[in-house]
Length: 330
Image (cartoon, rainbow, N blue to C red; front, side, top):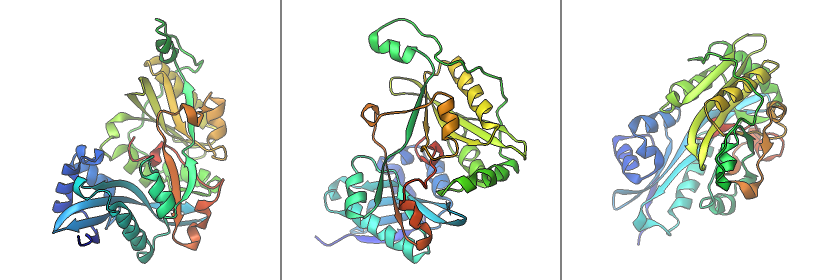
């Protein structure tokens, strides 16, 4: 058997049709979801063809990444597909290596992502990614029902003293979004730039926009933002804290939203935050706790591969800022 032909390509009608037929979750979400996800990357796909047919695809989101006081270009690996007839032939690794080389030749600084248990051995073994372990899960119980059901007990009551302050949601991020990023960026070594443009794109312009609730303090002197998403998952009603950033005004926003979620019957709130992150102390004060790895329903690994000297800190502990906004699946 001859080797498949690997190429780096922009989104095309042929690739879109292959995406929609692949069975990948993003393809199931439709054309807009695919277009929106990759619109910032002029060549987001490594593509494998055999006998002129697409037999493999890997997709990468391009974003602006902060490295200390500088800004660079990062590529987040998010989707991979290999046709059933071609599995076990190393095509996944060939696709990843091809895009890794493209990252270097196009002046990119970093490749990174969140491989699952199936992909992790390839990324961390064959592809030389640095493993940061699992993502930094935090959990905050909001109602007793999630736990009482485990013991078949018929009761439910709030587990938080937080009270809903009836804050109105915002529908866009204004100039205060840039002021917010400028205020928190000095405390972040490595992380996706969360300025006004990014927040609007991620929270209000995408296919999941209708599922997010966003509240904010838009005071230019002390801006803050909290974004959440509710879902029926893991055997209960949960909420993802998509983002929680800000200074002194962040804590009352977090507490109000926890009260709001509990009043709506949400039983658990989940967040991602490292102990060195600027929002970690606020989340812990609000009652969030690290979730032990043995209790996690799924394993989400976190890895990086710097492609330039600028991105070298990405492999160091204590540098990264993550939140659920970095997840491409929530």
